[in-house]
Amino acid sequence: MENESRKKKHLTFGGCDTIALAEKYGTPLYVMDEQKIRSKCREIQENFLGKYENTRAVYASKAFLNMTMCKIIESEGIGLDVVSGGELFTAIQAGFPTQDIIFHGNNKSYEELSLAVKYDVGRVVVDNTYELEMLQKIAKSNKKKVRILFRIAPGIEGSTHKYISTGQKDSKFGIPLAEDQLNHVVAFALKASHLELMGFHFHLGSQLFENGIYVAALDVLAKLMKDMKERYGFVSKELNAGGGFGIFYVEGDQPKPLRYFTDQIMEKVKTICHEMGVPIPQVIIEPGRWMVAEAGLTLYTIGAIKDIPGVRTYVSVDGGMPDNPRPALYSAKYQADIANKMNLEKVQKITVAGKCCETGDILIWDLMVPPVKSGDILAVYNTGAYNYSMASNYNRLPRPPVVLVNEGIDHVIVRRETYEDLLHREEVPMYLQKKVKESSEII
Ligand SMILES: Cc1ncc(COP(=O)(O)O)c(C=O)c1O
Ligand SMILES: N[C@@H](CCCC[NH3+])C(=O)O
Image (cartoon, rainbow, N blue to C red; front, side, top):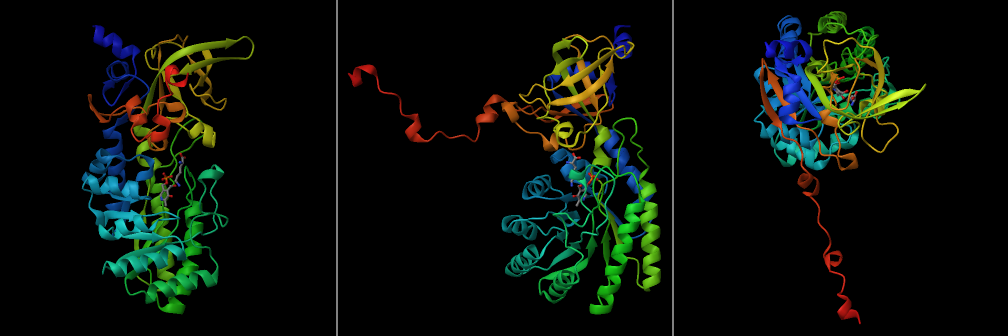
């Protein structure tokens, strides 16, 4: 009976009572639902990998990465996109098959590329000439042949926040569509003894809802592929259309099923190849947010409540911009509920503030909730992407743990940071450690 009433009042997630999770692990707490991640993987299998021949999907691990996530992704037959030595190291430590890893980034270092070459990463997506020349040298000294794609900047802009738009001409990512630059890199790669050019890549941006921009970018790529075929006889074996598929955060967001994007991409690629008289290359997608955002929930405890009559009610939680910098960075919006009052009517408008010394540390403006009290638990939805992975220790706040829930069972996959962790890498120079002289020594 008591269980039933808890169930009615409490939010459940991944088969777990969120209030019980908050009591067990404390707050703030990231909760990830394994089944939700796996169902996205299955959607990819059914609507893309299983539907079209010669296709590949990699998960953009910058959205949410740890060794457990590597294991889940590997078990679902999906590859991994990494953008740094740290992400690559995590995947290697988790035993992820390195041939299924694609390495991205606009400024990969010598050390990062060396790690990629040493561990036989499947593809390196080369972003610029500097990297191209360095990679050839590293591959040569390791006596290995590295398979590469070129990332191009197609000059196509999606409708999203400008900080997460990447396909436009004026972008730090990708090789510009300038004939001399393109010819230079392609000619270099085709001659390079230790590189094998497989094709091209673009990534238009994040939280995108329209498939038309993928088609427009493929039109740009078609022209490039024709030029390269005519000039060098080079025919792309691979074409990577990036990620960016949008998800639902708040009213107004209109997410589409994966096939809305992938069917259109495949149809366009087929048409282009038919017109060019070349075989259809392997088509690759790299979703990040779409795979994990909805699988995540963040739990907070409500502390101070400040009512400014006639203005607004600030309700402060025990986390904020360090565990979710997205509202401060991109004016991102979220929905939330009071997890211990799910059966009550929403009659009060509040603004959810974080606990940092920043006026901009506001998680949600104007949220309708039931009458709220200090000690209530706030659950913020769809925080699975770019929250844990972008978390910081601002104001010396220890980062929250990540608990994986799966049909009623919970496991800690990342433990909570401690104050000791915060001091872990610190050293005080010897000269500052000297004690102040005793007064008897001075006089
Ligand atoms: C190269 C590349 N691929 C894939 C992604 C994944 O993007 P999203 O999380 O929006 O799917 C990103 C991030 O924007 C990216 O930079
Ligand atoms: N960090 C961004 C997404 C960046 C995607 C990578 N290029 C976000 O939270 O929306």
